[in-house]
Amino acid sequence: QVQLVESGGGLVQAGGSLVLSCAASGRTFSSYSMGWFRQAPGKEREFVAAHLWDGDSTYYAYYADSAKGRFTISRDNAKSTVTLRMSSLKPEDTAVYYCAAKYGNTWSQQPSSFNYWGQGTQVTVSS
Image (tube, helix red, strand yellow):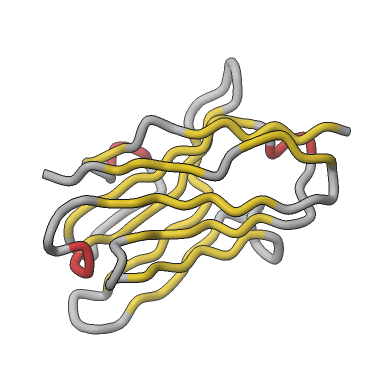
């Protein structure tokens, strides 16, 4: 069982930056693939970024087209945390952002691919 707790959301002006953090419980964090999703009012939850375990000792990042060049995902296995650094924020980035985790290295961009979820943190970008 993994518990995830997000932090770092808030209100920011367009063009600004925010850093979201996700703290995970559990002893095998290094073997989990981690993801960030977001959900805007009236819309489906969508993939933002993932930090994936290759099943050995390598990790790699993968981004939605909307996040490429603006968002950076990283992890600290010693602290069991995953971070999403967001810059050049746009009003359309406004959403509740969720941290997600799944054991292993098989995944998809669909929310159903991830087994564990945080409670979400609100990000609001004003124009």
